[in-house]
Amino acid sequence: MAQTPNRGTLLRHTLMGMQITATGSYAPPNVVTNEDLVPLGLDPEYVFRRTGIRERRHAPPEIATSDMCYFSAQQCFERSGVSPADIDLLVVGTVSPDWHIASTAAVLQDRLGMRCGAIEIASACAGFMYALSTAAQYIATGASQRALVMGADCCSRVIHKEVPKTFLLFGDGGGAVILEKGTQQQGLLAYCLGAEGAGAEQLYIKMGGSREPASHEGIDRLDHSLYMDGKAVYKWATRVLSESIIDVLEQAQLKLEDIDLFVPHQANLRIIEASADYLGIDRDKIIINVDRYGNTSGGSVPLALDEAYQAGRIKPGDKVLMSGYGAGLSWGTAIFAW
Image 1: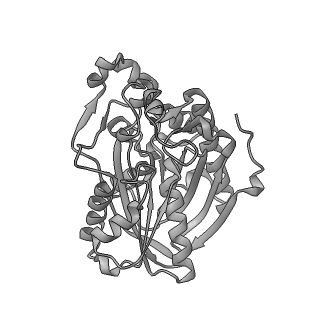
Image 2: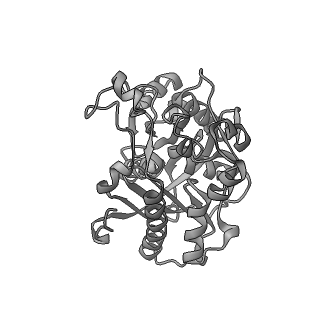
Image 3: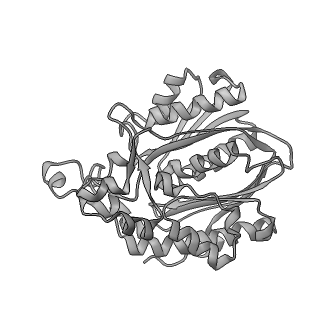
């Protein structure tokens, strides 16, 4: 297991003067319950006890990652009155692109009819947090006036059913936000981005890149499917979620009770509960939807954020703590002043 890095080497900052003016999300209509996984040798109640997941969504063949991004973006436009022409930056976090080349961000930019830069970030379950902090830099410097930021993944396409213990964890979905100039009381009160690359092979797809191109032999070995060392990743994720929350609270000079809502990556309910118990977080302040969507990787945080916002759980002036963590091993945690 990788050692905890020197916390002084992590990227930390504060970026104020920006606001999230709209949220949107999309999850495919096809629901896959734990009972549907019985043919794979999985016990429904055991799956729920170990993960907190009861069901997840799988995209039909005609839906790819860029489609989920598109539907999420359309919700943002409809809810805000902003048009694609008003967006001057697009940042997409995904590790399940439509194709390896060209980028899903470029495909999406064309479909939305936008004329702007399109950045794609491959930070897996931390992808949206990396995308949000990247867009925030452009807003803060004035290089962008209004950015469309999203995270989405079609996990069912990169995990094979013959690896059932990993297959059961993941679902498909995504979400988006519009980020633009705001008051000096709005924005990223604190954020930290980090990575422990020594643990990269604990959660990765071995085949398909320049290290090991696709081959028939590799497919026979299931090297094209996501591999995860479940115990090691669980231990790391529980640690890094707790540590990064403490980190941003210290940066912002805030206490746990100052946070109005926690929006953690929805990987496993046990990870969230372990960190909540360790830190003493009020469970009522945590948004939970892993039971209905499973782990949607880069789509997890924005999907949960949209759900919370549409339910009226986020109000102007609220402090929202968001955290994504996963393959890389990488993480991003931030406190956003709404």
